[in-house]
Image 1: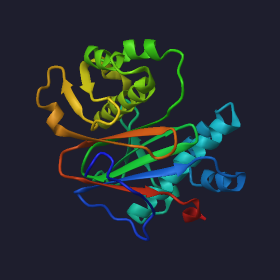
Image 2 (image 1 turned 135 degrees about the horizontal axis):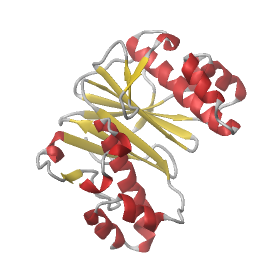
Image 3 (image 1 turned 180 degrees about the vertical axis):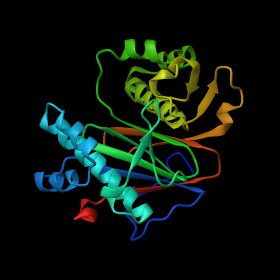
Image 4 (image 1 turned 90 degrees about the vertical axis):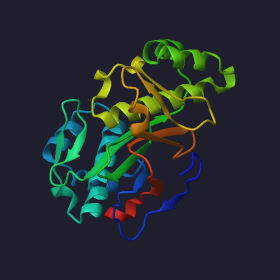
Length: 250
């Protein structure tokens, strides 16, 4: 497994998990009305109700496609109809499968793309961001990054600051999502790497000297102007990348 040693492939004919593998999936969310309507039928009543609460059509469509593909994807791994999959949620909102706790997964979406991570008996977190200029980048970094991260970030050349910011943001989000604690975990109490071109790593956690060796990180770019990060429990796993085809659920 290397930082940039991945290749996005079309999905395999059959899906199966292994303890030494982490599967990452990317999917476009900008689908037509017919495809979105089909995916909406796969959602549970509570998911359909949540979709209906979105004010703007594009936000509703993105949610429907992201959740519908999640169900279709997990249905292939579990050999189970996607509409029959049931989720449970941690107090911080992290989803898990009700029927098979050995299969772990996480999902993130931003703009017109979603990414998924699927593992076997390993905790996992994934985060995706669409890189764009932010007027409040300085304020966000000061409020969310650790002192060490801020020092490194401020020393970056101006041309690399946006990439460094989103590197840090996605890696921190992936870690707290893997922990299942969400934003209740203090973001300034752990350090991640962020310099463009350097390997994604958890560097240290305040009060937990062994924590950095418990997790392995992987950064990747699923599309132009998108950056993503994985935080995976343990060592010695290989990274597989797949592109979801919407023809899979027709």
